[in-house]
Image 1 (tube, one colour):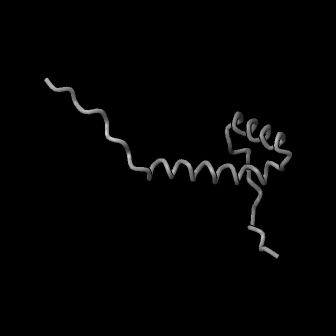
Image 2: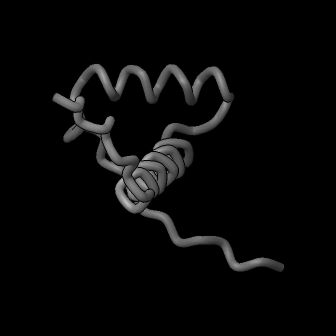
Image 3: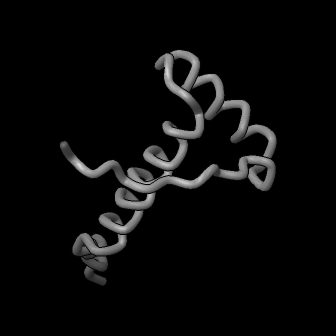
Amino acid sequence: MEPKEQTRALNLRKFPKELRKRLNKIALDLEEDVQEFAPRWLRERLDREENKLQAPSKKGAKPKAR
């Protein structure tokens, strides 16, 4: 039996109203509880943002010769 990850109730009241509506709609579409969906979604989003910051940035275009 795998140990289940401990979770706490996520207080969505502190989130912007539009984000709460979107998270609730997505959770309904996936037929999941928003309390289970939202933390996973936030973790995935945070990972993506961290990967963007860690990715080597591309150098800009070469300056034009005069």
